[in-house]
Image (cartoon, rainbow, N blue to C red):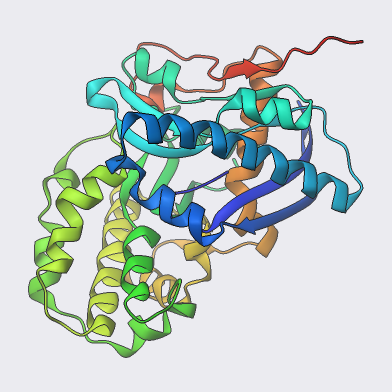
Length: 344
């Protein structure tokens, strides 16, 4: 798994069957500066540079997987790779996740499932979020599951169907502000906690049209760059105040969903679950909801675990993408298979 927050590549080796899962080993491999720079600006690259990055990232991911397995003295049967999203514009029928599956297969010698989102988008869906089927099958004891990654997204059952959508930007915005302080992120939200809330700025953020749209809906980096980031960049406030205000915006948008859906129990994962100030704000704004931040393994690797599940479902011919979540014409079995090797 590689997310919009650009933390690195999340690797999780899982035993999966129809009865559940077990994480054998997991690790996050941080991106070198060169890859971080490339992925953060690739939407502005030439077609040639984009195509080359797709192949080179696939080889890099493949080598990273091989190194991980060797260091752990483990073996895998197959790989499920989300890749890294560069363009996500489902209203145009477009979503792209780079990290070529054939290149990963060539490096590892294993079958690879990749491009999980494209079939759903071709069927008229958002292609996102895909994690909710894992929420349903693996974490169904909670009323809702919230992921605080680059983007905050939620899934829950409504009228017998699984519903899910992106709520608002999260670490994508917070990490960008933290970088102004020379930090990769704001540890525990400590800088945000020291800042002051600006009601006028908060009002501008909350007034963005996306928040009044009904699901299914999803966010991409393009929306953040064109709609959300300009509000922050137009402000001359101290960084701590901006972090404080954005944190309240994130917590407020999530709390609005929790209250509107009557969510009683919530599982919170993703890097933002370690942001104690964000969690404190969310708890204060959502007193009716029992909020659970699980063990560090689940927090860090839930998305990678679920993409392993999506790969397992693809390889066994079972539905792994829910039309009730994405708005597509029908449920589907998403993912492109690479790496059918000669047994000799």
